[in-house]
Image (cartoon, rainbow, N blue to C red):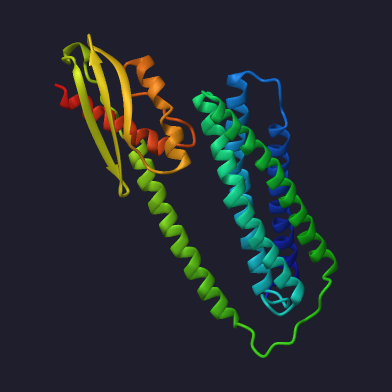
Length: 293
């Protein structure tokens, strides 16, 4: 059990994480309401939202959950001993689902579409839908957080009748095992992605390539990315995507085609929010051009 000083410090840290989470959500909401911006300013605004989500929101949420769990386990309140604590965990899980199922994809989609440049009406419509969704999600998240804070202050439900309460050692073992497994998979996935994203893309000498149509492919994580390109007068005149992963982010990554044609090279900047798929398509083009030698 935590001593009085330990409980006090834990509450302070818990409140700091809550304040950080609220501040991040408010910042995203304010930025999302900005208008009358040019294309570059729109991308910067969305990149800021994207960064806030992947740093402040993500780490603050983990901090809130971790400190709340420690406080429940190492004080007299327990994890399931009181109805109001169970209510808080239900609300917290609801908030988690809301943020990672709707807020994250909206932020990711907005930054990807603005990086591509909203090339057509369909992209603009999708972008506007993401903006509306993001605002709605944040307002709902605020409502849930206000309910959680109210429950914490007033503790409206008492202790529940129960025949069995999980022992502290059991809770710690299950939680620790889950955290370790989650971190291990997260780190391995992150390192794998970073390794792939940092791969260098060769720049074939187009002056040495004969005219023709060439195809290339790249396989990553069980998906195949294939394209073909037209070479005429030592110039890449057209790039066509033949096979791509079936997801919005993979579709956003196809925005690199215009960059490839402008730079006349497979080595271009990837689409923010779809960087891994962008790299796969670049590698596929690199393979096609190398096969043209």
